[in-house]
Amino acid sequence: MARKIAAGNWKMNGLKADLAEIDSLAAAIADIESRPEVLICPPFTLLPLMHERAAGTGIAVGGQDCHPEPSGAHTGDIAAEMLADAGASHVILGHSERRSDHAEDDALVAAKARAAWRAELVAIICVGESEAERDAGRTLEVIGRQLAGSVPQGARPENTVIAYEPVWAIGTGRTPTTAEIAEVHAFMRERLVAAHGAAAADIPLLYGGSVKPGNAAEIFAVADVDGGLVGGASLRAADFVPIVAALAAS
Ligand code: PGA
Image 1 (tube, rainbow, N blue to C red):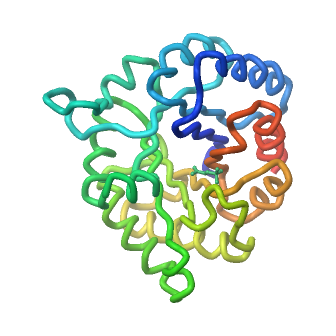
Image 2 (cartoon, rainbow, N blue to C red):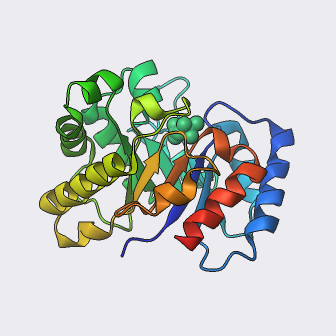
């Protein structure tokens, strides 16, 4: 069985004043039975501060991107080693906003995943089809191609998490049906095992895209869904706590 993970992606949101959300989150999830792994990925500026603030709470912190190289002349970029140095244990890679805003392709995402492993970070590798691709019946073809290109050899449950995030469901309030999520997650499980061996069956598979307190229980009940990658609803503890609770109860 894959471990369960509730991951929050703050994207380009959050100032120092928002670190208080971590205190509320920590207090509220302290008594949740069979608590899943809880992770928040803030903007780089808050990473060391959030790591300090979360010390002793069991809440992990992660980055939202990294450069493939460990250091060098790459203005504005962050190395995986820097994330680890700041207290990160995970890094989100290949998010659709990176793929579209920064033209990241599968080969670059794979290079970033190898960089994450080099720095002993868990790589959370994102895949997902656009609305046009879904409408054209190409969802599994796109996911298969992204998995093959973005997940390097050496992927194991200890170093890799996959997030299925349909691009059209991110920040829109729309979600696939539970049957559609089940189909993609079963396909991903099968492809990962075929490419990376039997142990890859335990690589956690997260669903992302408009996960909210109101739909979390239904989504986490879907076969092969081991947790969520949550954007908007991770910014406030009041929204994220019921999502963590729903995952714990699933
Ligand atoms: P959302 O974002 O929950 O705001 O839809 C999810 C994500 O992009 O990770």
